[in-house]
Structure formats: structure tokens, C-alpha cells
Amino acid sequence: MPDKITIGVSACLLGEKMRYDGGHKLCPYLTDVLGSWFRFVPICPEVGCGLSVPREAMHLEGNPAAPRLVTIESRIDLTEQMLAWCGQTVVELEAHHLNGFVFKKGSPSCGLFRVNVYTKGMSARAGRGLFAGAVADHFPLLPAEEEGRLEDPGFRENFLERVFAYKRLQDFQKEDGSLGGLVAFHTRHKLQVMAHHPVSY
Image (cartoon, rainbow, N blue to C red; front, top):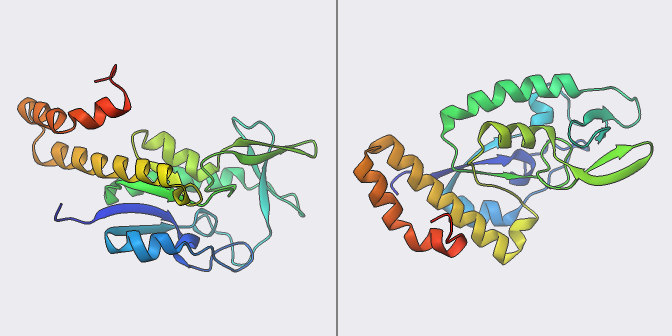
């Protein structure tokens, strides 16, 4: 693959000081290991939608299927502001031809799995960050993972396998797209597909 694989990343994971408290959440595995092979597209949804650094902490509230993004102390609802930015940004991301995305776990904007959603003072880890949800909806085939889960060898291997396969699929669609090429693509990935789901194969 002559072109570097392109991965979207929550900007704080690359050491950029964009967190609500003015800090970062540098992930050395991303910068020191994957950085040798991947090209990163850093994104901070909260800064991107116009919020400052530092800023008041916020969380998700209400229905986990359609939560609201609300500041904790001042009770400002930022949902529409964030969703408007998300809708515009996912379209802009098409130009980057992303091969995967690594999100910040637990974030009300970037958390991909089991994000806390508060209802009547009680929390349930049943939500998804607004930006992570927008990316997943707009790019349903895009391999996505959280940085915390990349510490697990099984999750890490699965994510990287999907990223490389998705890159090859995108290259095929861009450079070939023929029926014969599709057969060759599936032949090349026969054992890989069978290892995951023989029925689908």
C-alpha cells in the first residue's frame, strides 16, 4: 500500500490540549506505534463546534437513544450546536477517505461505547457520544474503536485487521471496481472472512 492509511482520531489522544480542563489524554500507542504507519486526522468536536479551552464540563442526559448534551453546572443545552457541527463535519470527512477512527472513551462527544447518560440523577452506561454516533451513522462500514480498548490485544488485532481490509476495499473500488476484480478481492480475503463468519462467506 503506497499510500499511508488514514485514521480519524480524537485530537486529545495525540497530545493536543483540547480537553475541558485544558489538558490532553495522550495515547503513546497511537503516536509512537501506529503513527509510523498511519496518517492521522485529529478532531475535537467540542472545540470544533465553537467551545473554548478550558470550558465547563458537560455530560449526556435523557434518553440514551437520543441524549442531550448539557453543561453540568450552568445547565446549558449544547445539543443542537453540536449536532449541527457534526452533520457538516462528517460530510467534510468524506474528502479524507478515512480507513478507520479511534475515539476517546467515555466522552459525551467522542465515546463510542457505554457512555454515561444521566436521568433524574442516576447514570447508565448506555449511550454514545454525539460525534461518534454521527460518524458511525454516516460511515457504517468504517472500522472504529476506542483508545482504551486498543490496550486489549484481541480488540487491537481485530481493529487493525478491519482497517487494512477496509483500505484494500476502498482501493479496489477506486482503482478497479470490475466484477472480475471483485471476485479476486473476495478470493484474496476468503480465509479472513471464513475465520470471522463462515455463513456470510
